Image (cartoon, rainbow, N blue to C red):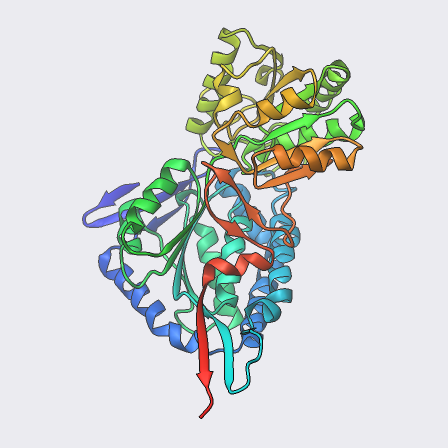
Length: 468
């Protein structure tokens, strides 16, 4: 970020080569006032638009994103470093699946709620929009995370203002282009490039009626402080340290492949990626051998190369945090059985960090306690279910956990004991849009997707009409 006179500029620095991909001017108070006023003026018209029309326009928005998925994929790669072979699928698989599921249930979930009939009365509960929703979106999955709130908020009749992460400002502009191409009324969807201070001021403004934030625990706390005393909702998805447990009866070939992918896809920069693994002693050695061999097959390099399967992390600072965790763990007795130094493109003092697999780890180490958000994994041997569940719950976070077993009844029983918002069996790192997406503890209080995903964006109003 830099200033030129009274203008504040934000550079998007590509992790690929450190070049400046784009520069944008951050909005000043007068520009933010225009955005807030447009949203406020658009509320009445949009609230009175039929749900069918809102669905139609959201579908056209999604079709725009699909039609431009290759260009959007390139932009994602340039902005945050995920390999180009994967980035178009953020639109073609994830975004369209989640958006279309929410559209498919909108008519049912947003209609008036009937109550038991009483002669002489008409009574029902109406689901009204809350007003204007501010979406503060992250960089790691810049469209997937945003679509979780943008589509249900719009379908519910709210106007939306998006502030995207400074690393992925172009994504906010793409959302605006998609809504414009779809034909949304003026002011219904807008984006703003803004500083943290400006975002805080927006939240304190009476024209903002709900806030969605995906990011760090510290960022979520700042959002709640900014909203304090306003009596508005703040939906947060924050940190995670998602665990995986491989039971003795697991299908090892599946468990190995899925755990490697869940640990290292997107360079480990996934909210629900696997960050620590516990393996039953009976299968520990075979699991570790397979995990090591498969990890070594990654191709670390320039994410614009179609052969690359692992790109750089988002920036050097984030990579250094992971390197420091690895160094500290090794100093405490951990052993790196796969090291970044095995990967030719891995370079100290750069975002290019090859995957690291650590054994002899324990919960005294930061790498097993604190969110890494990078390509490192620690694997611990456990004696059984009780020890595994105890270790899985030994965390301030609780987004997802995954179990690898052939016993579905035991998986359900263990899942009941594990302190997370989602429990997987024989899969990981996936959001099913028919299931609610939420977390516990320091992971935050937000909910998204499923039939419950409209809840944050509606205000209930009772009608109690006595006939004359």
